[in-house]
Length: 434
Image (cartoon, rainbow, N blue to C red; front, side, top):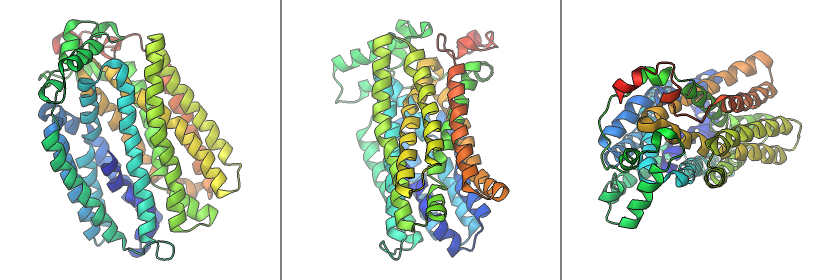
């Protein structure tokens, strides 16, 4: 996750440099940054299914190799078309990364440890994101940094993923029983934890066994029933809002700081790193807190739904508060605190797809992530439009905060007393599919 986010987020700080070098407009830069998320969103389901059928040991190294090659192609691109094509290829290559990883968490962790594990995924996304923007800003700034060309930076960022792919394939195994480092007690803990899930539909011995199978059984995914479930709509809705909001930090935030606070590229890269570092801490804290709430209350509503909604609402308040602050560092610190609260809700979102997905975890998570990244794709395009329409970055921040309020509302609409298929408006589809 960290290496993937270094490769994909480097463009955020390099945007102004690349735009000047290639004589692009801000609108063209918006399309360039969004190109990744369009293919990333549309390929969530097919690449997630690929990861499900091939297994993480095969799929994740293939994904890493492909996104590394695409990053190297970005370094060699001579115009907008080549850069956009490489960003699209990056998006395709990384599309299956999170669904495959979340499915792996469902096999390797009992239900009371899943939020911490998925929180770690979210944390290391922002480890990579923070490193990417800081290293990029430091590397390309000719006055305060190393003065490297942006092309050389992208080429360097392509190398670690190739090394990781080889090491992961050698070390990892798809299921606990395949790995020589897992003892019998650990296998029993995982199986019993999954069998004791909070949802009635998973309180069966079969559910406990199926979650530690080394190979995912090939079954038809009940797409119509999933699409007809209001629960999936609300889960997808909060993800659209969270992803669109997070995207501001990895696209236009550095440019916003440069244009409104009068700071250089290197300084904007450092300040851009702060809200992303807040996400790193929040992923672990949010995962541990959500698991603790589930252990204490036994309630998915408390541990996932209400926690997620409250955190997003707090984030919106802090964004609006930051608009009233003049100092660059103080404003960024308040926004970073808002980023922290938004990220506390991340483990709730990832884990609810496991808690309520039943046998369709990969499909549910891929659908959620697809919708979220359509929001991430749209926001960088919307920023230049908002600037042209209202002539101020304040309009962008208002929309930024409103997005998180909408996400909180979607959380509060979610019912957690029944799994996603159980809430489907097309219940008759379920028996045939299962």
